Length: 437
Image (cartoon, rainbow, N blue to C red):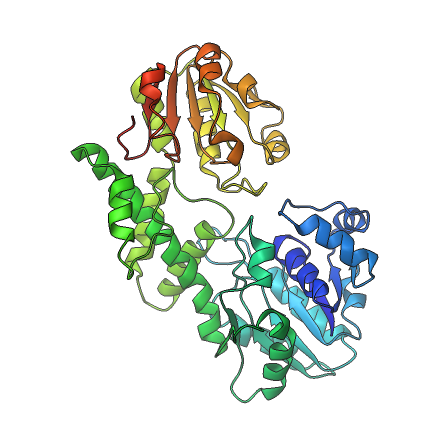
């Protein structure tokens, strides 16, 4: 099939590249000429394991191309994916201006009947909104809702081996149904992965899925606070609770709160969608409120132990919001760093992948350095705070840390060192709701 993906950011680039990997001819289009120029040179705007090699392979085979002219790229294709941003508005709703612009551009420039697939995360009723925009096109435009469920750091695997493929189609649109089933057939060979529903259900499914996962995280973070008060260990509680098959073990890990580009935005959007329809989704509201509070847990522990942070050096390990990505949006590390700097502290931070993004963010700011070696960051530090559980941090040289730090105080935001007997090595250790050894 001939496919155009409009928007070459995280979702668009992964989607387009993976479709080319299974034999389709794909053009990824974006108005950002610098981004397209870099992609044509093999320089990706994001870090995602396995993606760079896949882009190179399919570009060499001419199955994957890049264009800075979306109006031209949509001509002569069978399917057009919309993968542009839908950033949060000040009221928590999603900004749909970019999606609307793409729809209008498609209506004016296509040269044949197409399926227009909304891959961007959008509010309920967006499919109907877009159908209204394209209804006067010279050629038939079928509008389909197909939200993405790609986890950063595992996006390629998620696309090639999906849990499910949610497809929202207007009742009676057999053309779109046939196209979408054909399109996703190569990644559904072991069993049918496509879940067909109406567009409103598909749009809501994305928000509900992410909010439910965020809810589990916030709930366990509240439980971790209770554990610290009563002498329980959140690891044990998680194991005991997660052993129940009805609950399971995933997304039950206590930590410094969730971040990234999806959970915070989608929780807010679900709340906004509810309020637009006179429904107050209290659990979603509470999920966000708990997360905002939890993102301050690390600096609260520092203040309690060290007192006034003025002039104190804090070593931060991990800046990305999760491992295997360079995405620092809404990262708990940023909340920590900003709070320490606001208190007059000094920050030395390290991240194996996201360092450049952090340097760009804090460029020109004083009292913060993003260093290339994690042990250099810890030199003369009054505290080391682990925020992101990257593999290289999971079994560090604690003897070296003890020698290089000014105070042997560790705050483990991911509880990965809670069983390492750090107290016997001379450290003062704090986790999140755990009984550190």
